[in-house]
Image (tube, rainbow, N blue to C red; front, top):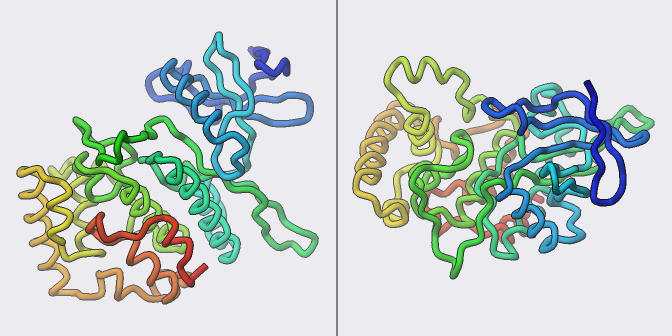
Length: 319
């Protein structure tokens, strides 16, 4: 059964198929909707996120790179978004050989979106491939051309008062794309977004298999929690463990855990130095050029204090 919902603009939208089913609350599922010949996205949200979204819409009015709603229904707490063809995750999954120059374009626009967010004091906290939305076409020559890119999903975005690092009772954001300090829920800053964006760059340039955990059940069966496995990979790829990360975390139990994982990582590196990111080559990912590695190695520095700002990332010669 379809339903028609009026937006604050006066436009009427016909709710269609489910795009993303909420695992616990069906009412919060995401739907495709139609108005005339145009497609849109309906997202029913909590009252707190509805209010946050209204504030963000006001603060980032006119943004081309941040995915702000274009209409809403306050009574049902529905946000209406422009429909985009793919997420970056879905795009690479469906088109693993997507044009390298166009993937670079997607990353550039994502960086510009993050700069816009950071410039006004916000931390996104959940930068990941499925929060980057993309429209693209095939031109008259059959070449893939990206036409629009936006960074979305601000459910857990945060604007710290006085620039203080964020401390939370538990880690927030997607476990796969969190920074090392994000895994500990201690000392999250804008630098944490930069680290996550660095991982997204690695994924988009073709080395996603080294990042993505595909079998959570086997990990759990062997008594390994995902956070531990991901931290171990971070220490393997981007280590050794710097004192600066321990100073940022400032939690005895987490610092002890990081030191133990670091010892494991260094043992593996001693046996096979090629696991370090600095040793990766085009055999790992054809698009991971020396210029890209130069930029990403700084973004994925394990010491949050010495990571570049997003402004510095966007000034890198690789672009």
